[in-house]
Amino acid sequence: MASAYSKDLLLKMYRKMYLLRRFEERAGQQYTLGKIAGFCHLYIGQEAVAVGCNEAIRPDDYMLSAYRDHGQPLARGSDAGMIMAELFGRGSGYSKGKGGSMHIFDIEHHFYGGYGIVGGQIPLAAGMAFAARYRNEDRVTVCFFGDAAANQGAFHETFNMAQKWKLPVIYICENNRYGMGTAIARTSAVPEIHKRASAYGMRGEAVDGMDVLKMYEAVKDAAEYCRAGKGPVLMEANTYRFRGHSMADPATYRSKQEVEDERRNDPIPKLREYALKQKLGLSDADFEAIEEEEKRTVDAAVKFADESPEPSVEELWRDTIVEPGEEDVRPRERVLGVKVTNWPKYPTGQELKVTWDLEPRAEAEAADKKAGLSR
Ligand SMILES: Cc1ncc(C[n+]2csc(CCOP(=O)(O)OP(=O)(O)O)c2C)c(N)n1
Ligand SMILES: [Mg+2]
Figure 1 (cartoon, rainbow, N blue to C red):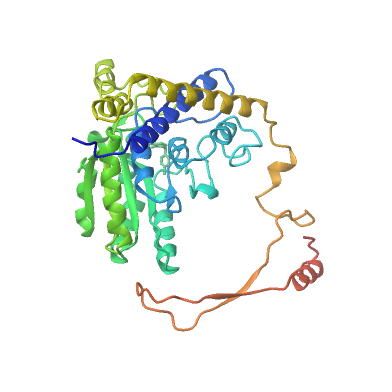
Figure 2: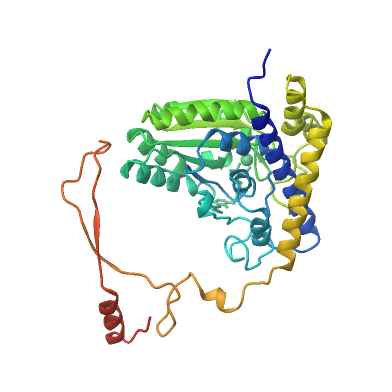
């Protein structure tokens, strides 16, 4: 029987999962060498979730995540060197070295962070989905968060509005069974998180997050549903992190046996075994060649990060606030007012034309000068 998936797709998914794994292994190593400071949460074990999802959506769809955020942008195609440089706190990183591991942000690939507040990205994703709908774009927003984030108030408040407005957003709860050192079953009245969708009349489902093809199929179907205007989806991807919560966590709250058992379910060899069984003419050598290439990609990323300069002291003050007397390095227009007539009922599909009155630059400068401010 012919394979249900093309050779290209299977190899692409293998390549990406391997890249994510290798990147994280090297990040962990660089952390222990003292090259990375602060928090560092590795994605090892969860690769199938980000990769299966990314292949199922469009490159222009929006994506947000929590602080365990190296894997999703890598799956999107972000530059491994710029992510590693951010971890190293170097000026060539995605947040100019000022965010670190938890704050990857890559507009080119529509990856909008990287958030340290547990559950903080959940309402933001609804806002992005609202904006897409408002502008009559058919983009879907994908929002990743952990199992412990499902106990935050923002989760419930957002789902209420998202379902009420039928927002095109897929919420992917990466249930790795722990929030820091606490098993989710110890803190949750309903530990099967997808079931909580029913409280809002929303579509909710569980997926095997250790199987990249199952993730791919589930997200493809959910994205179609969202694009058709049917509303949001809560998808619980059952997965497992093979390492501790962060680099600072020896993970003594779970048994070695449990981790060993879960490692037998590793999504990377699983995909390889599947692909080899298909009549696609693949052999071990094809996978080994991919692994070698991705090892070189990550070696180059580490080298790039290590050779990049630290941000300058001046950089500390950029992209923050403009103090009186300071140079404004980001000239911006000021919005004077928003002209909107006939607010349409939401959702309508009717295009809403909004225009902004911007203060002419010369007038803004004159006003600043009068107030004793320089731009
Ligand atoms: C609002 C808030 N409360 C507490 C914390 C501390 N904290 C950081 S990570 C974490 C656990 C979150 O676990 P989960 O959502 O399951 O994600 P995972 O780390 O497993 O990917 C906690 C409690 C925080 N960052 N923000
Ligand atoms: Mg968790």
